[in-house]
Length: 148
Image (cartoon, rainbow, N blue to C red; front, side, top):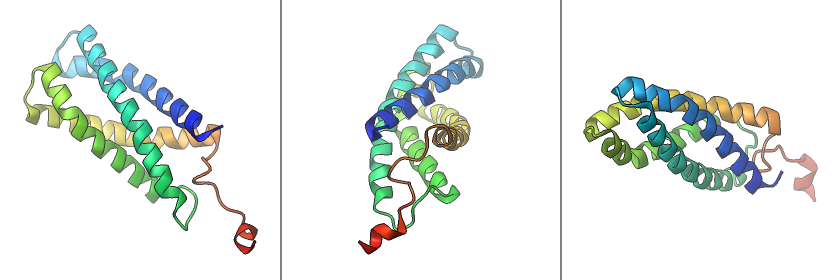
């Protein structure tokens, strides 16, 4: 699978599952109509989808220049932290405005979502790699390739 197709497929699968989980959770947490929170989940997902593509493109470029190949637990943690940290910064004003809550309240909501999505990002990336294999940027190199 090409790197672009891989990133698009991974991001779409990730976001479809996220919308299904986040819409109802936001409705319960903020006592808002599900139609509204589902709409918010779609908007957040669209933003996250664009961020996912951009972040993974940058991460894989960085990863391809590393001497140690593979995706260790530490590398997966770094990936999850970088992705989610950037996303929190982007989504705070959107959530605050949509739910008509303060930025502080949106930040607290984001912390709860961060815990969920931090674990979800690690698990879903691992599952995706198990089903579709590692991308070329993380595949182990042939030791003979360095000799040639």
